[in-house]
Length: 162
Image 1 (cartoon, helix red, strand yellow):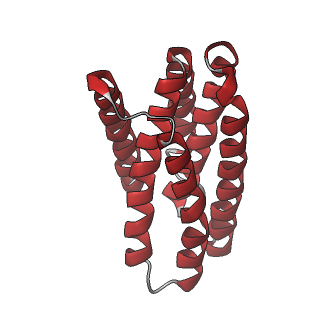
Image 2: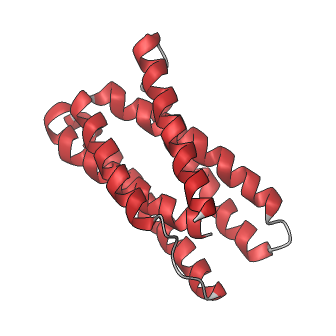
C-alpha cells in the first residue's frame, strides 16, 4: 500500500509535468492529461486512506516518486504528443502488472484487494486511451517505452525495499 500511494503521487507528478509542457507541444492532449491526473489524485487518496487504516506512514520513496515523475513528465511533454502517450502506455502497463500481482499477494486482506480492484479499471482505461494514439511504432518508441517501463519497475522495486 505504501508503494502504491507513492506511485500514485509519482503519476500525478508525471501528468503535471506533461501538462506544463504539452501546453506548448501537444495542446490537444491537455484535457486528457488533466482527466488522467484527476483519476490519479483519487487513487492516491484511496491508498492514503488504506495507510491511515493500517496506521502506516507513507513510503520513503514518496518524494523521489514526485521529483522523478515530474522530471519524466516534463521531459516527455517537451518531446510532444507521441512521447507523452508512449510514457502513459509504458507506465500503466508496468503499474497494471504490479497491481495485479498485489491482488494475488494480498488475497488475505479483502479491503486491500477492494482498494486495488477499484483502481485497476481506470488504470487500464488510461493505458488503452493512450495506446489508441498509435504509440507503438518504430525503434524510438520501443526504446522510450522500454526505458520508461524500466524506470517504473526500478522505482517500484526500490519502494518495496525502503
